Length: 420
Image (cartoon, rainbow, N blue to C red; front, side, top):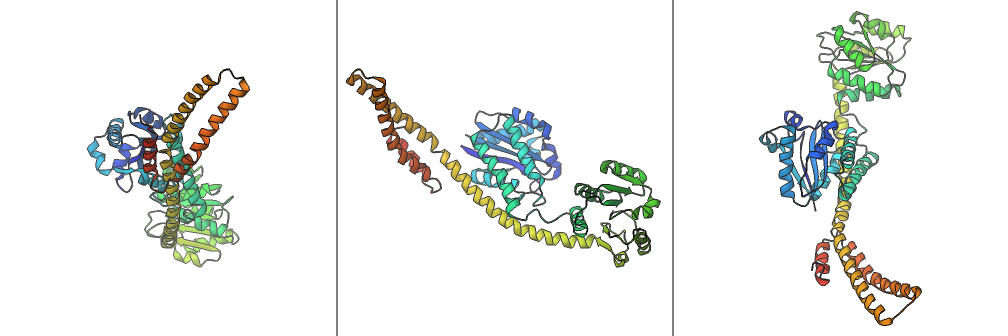
């Protein structure tokens, strides 16, 4: 029995290679059905935007890794030479550790991101539903999901924002405590503005205005966010009804100045306003920050927050790695103990066969017995066998983790001639 992971990710392959091998979630069942090999016992396929990994439990690592490469090439219609240099192969303990780190988001592009745990679970459930998992992978992936949850509960690895858009929203939450029932405005319809707006919606913002010099782009983004597109020259009048402003345009000069914000704040009766200026050059005049009850953060402010948070996540990642290693050791002990199971079963079968043969001889010599007497003798012989085998069976299982289990297994098989 061997565990193998064959795959590539954002560290080993550019996106041009990753996208060629990517398997969409609706296609997982088909890929699981197509990859077959006589020595492949269990299989899970994990495919995300940043990784494609094939997890295998096999009786022949060489044959199955070769079959895996051939499958990826055939299934995705890609020449092996295009992706083989980017593949990484991990075996046994290293394979287990890798999966646990993936589930804990320690191997992600953004360490601590929460999506990967759900993706690992979805991959496992798809394989399970397809009948491609067995006792080893049930144990392995259940523990991997447990590791992911433990890391989130026992560390602060996903507490701090490490992207510009997410950091901006986290700052808004600190100013307003809750974003429920708040109104936001997005100036510019670029990717960063869209990401920040999406985060705002997820955090409870109920109304979003979108303004862009090209109105069609504002309409498109407003539809995505279920917000309202407004004309560029109507921005100021709508600012009076806005709590949070995210700005990221390509304007060469500031589009919001101090005088405009002063007028807006009078109309708002000095209710707090939060401006997030992600643009370079800046969209919002820095003097806006001097207006009472106005909070302005630009890209440098956000980068400082992100840098501090990234350092904190790195510290938390060290704690998370200790959790991973703890769980890897426990799984390795469980897996090692499985090597003893066939020997224990064979030993008990041999003992039971001998008991049955000798019991039949004894009963033949004793002559006629009633049912109660036969049951008593059956129980006596069965009890003797169980008591004799109990201690060596327990000690064999306890030798797991001491590095001697394999020697003990071989010794038991030799002493009791279990391979004959």
